[in-house]
Length: 178
Image (spheres, one colour):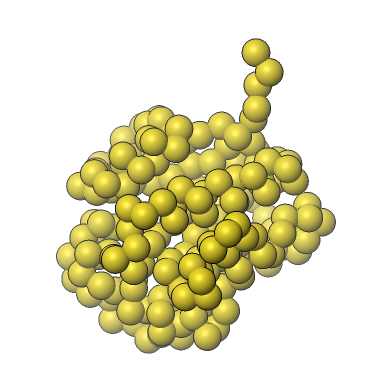
């Protein structure tokens, strides 16, 4: 049974999934309305459009971009390095105790390939595992985005199926004691 996003957000409170996660210099915090302009600028940049398989710029207001992200996501985090916004990560299509779809974007081109995506992923998956929120994560990768495909594969994701120009990849979070 699929719950509404609002109902899932309420349910997540009981899972004790932290709102804030942090390591040395990287922090994940809930997305705020004050992040609107950063998100719009980063998500409509040409490099991000190409990575997502889009050719034309999105013609949306900052508020609309923020609202769409919040509406579609159960959990949406802003990634910060030394208090500077660098990207976002979100969970969608959550089936509590089973699976969720993950999105991750480092919107600052100068900070890609610096390990921040890997560290953010590790912070989130550690919390998801400790709180038993999901057992499996899914990502969708556009076939033309080789960097994203290599990133997710490096983190242990495997391609499960290919639909048109999108590869569906998954990773189990269940720790097996072999």
